Amino acid sequence: MSDRLHAWVEIDLGALVRNARRIAARAGVPVLPMIKADAYGLGAVRVARALEIVHPWGYGVATVEEGAELRRAGITRPILLATPLLPVGIEAAHAARLTPGLGDPDVIEAWVAATGNAPWHLAIDTGMSRNGIRWDAVGEIGPLLRRAPPAGAYTHFLAAEADDASVASQTARFTAAVGALPARPPILHAENSAAVERLSGTSSWSLVRPGIVLYGVGTRERDIADGPEPVVALHARVVEVRTIRAGETVSYGGSFRAAGPMRIATVAAGYADGYRRAFSNVGQAIIQGRRTRVVGIVTMDMTMLDVSDVACAVGDVVTLLGTPPAEGRAAGRGVAAGIDIRAAARAAGLLPYEVLTGLRHRLRRVYLDPPPG
Ligand SMILES: *Cc1c(COP(=O)(O)O)cnc(C)c1O
Image (cartoon, rainbow, N blue to C red):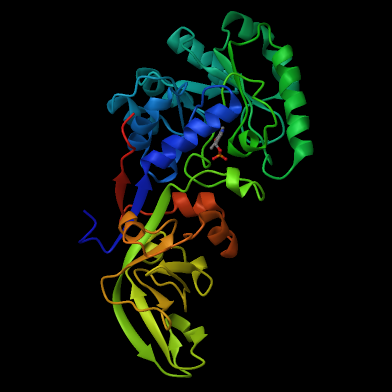
């Protein structure tokens, strides 16, 4: 299928499902997979359809249009809209049967008036200062909440991957805010990927909201063995191979200069595909089972690799991110590890979130289906 493609993103839906099962088992409650931003670039409809088998509570999106797309694709579970809804969007959100997370009293009033209190969740700000009603202000909207009780309430952690103290403080604030509501909403939630991965027992809440860990990027430094399976890979083909001499440079600006004779492979992916310019001179790649490195500046459509020690030819598949393709593994080329997206992002001064959501649509998405059952 990818025979004629110059560059593509491979998405292992079986690994996605196994990651979701592992997260649900760890948390002891259903998952609400966050599939906003087209499931971090993986394709929201394909991801949602694949995840149906784990019986998620619902799905999380950022825009009304993202939610409506899932409805058109036949998804019937609840869809949480996690970015504040503007009053002008209420009608469309209600028509798509979305469950908005609301925190602004005026918008809550408008939602309740327009929909007769269709399900919504109260967003509670416990320290992120981004959206939701402040944890210490929920008492002020008591009369409104008594008249129009929310179906759920939630908060969002600001540093669960790094900071024990902030998780404890935000949890205490959330608990206090929930206690100050006129009635305890039936559904409460807080944990993102990092918060689930750090849980020592099961979740105290009704469900968890993982995103990136489902897509194969763990949030912990240690416990690598317990981390998620890789899901996403970026592959591209070698389109030319050349030899250069000592002192010659590679790519724009001549930032890389050869110390001696070298072989350079030109690969058909660049920053217009989302293979970010920050990978210039620091990115790594797997080709023919060997690890190699990016030399010179990543250009819009092409990237150059040092293949001095690698027997490679035009047409070969290079893995720029993730695990080499199944054919390579099946052919016994002995690749022990791929390009870990978290480590690659860090080396380039990027977040793995930016790398995944930055993969552009010029790259065809090629899905590996999960094994049946
Ligand atoms: C994006 C998002 C998440 C998921 O975050 P990850 O770090 O990818 O797990 C959870 N909750 C909210 C409100 C979000 O916006």
